[in-house]
Amino acid sequence: MTYLLVKILHLFAAMAFIGTLFFQVLILTPAGRRLDAGVRTPMSQALGQQARRVIHVVAFVLYGAGLTLAWPYRSLLADPLSSHFATLLSLKILLALLIIGHYAALIFLRRAQRVTERTMHLLNISLLVHAVLLVICAKTMFVL
Figure 1 (cartoon, helix red, strand yellow):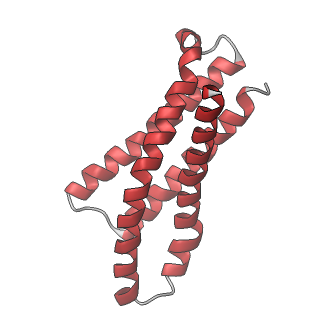
Figure 2: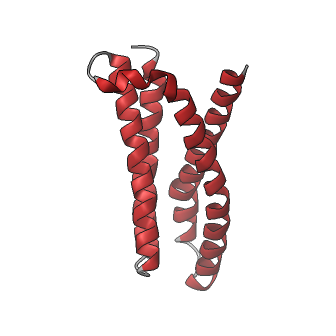
């Protein structure tokens, strides 16, 4: 029962994470371009603050559940090319670490006050691509 609960939490957190990125990249940014800067800037700031509040909890659940689900398979990581499953698990972990790297870069850029709308848009596109690739790995792990 605990395994099922962790798997469901992981699934819901992944949906929330990718859904947020999908919304930002494919809906919010294109719609925001049609607004005047006087409207777009405060809206973008307010949505960004709310997204950061929510995404921290989502990321904690997502990565915590992911680590819990991967733990029984840790011995496979010693030889990541030993099977399709081990290779995909290793790739999935690498993609998850790259996503964390994106957020580390964002923290650095924010502190240096070098975040622009374009920077955020490009970062969100990259995050979405990495997250989609991670999901593809996850879905093929138990098939191949």
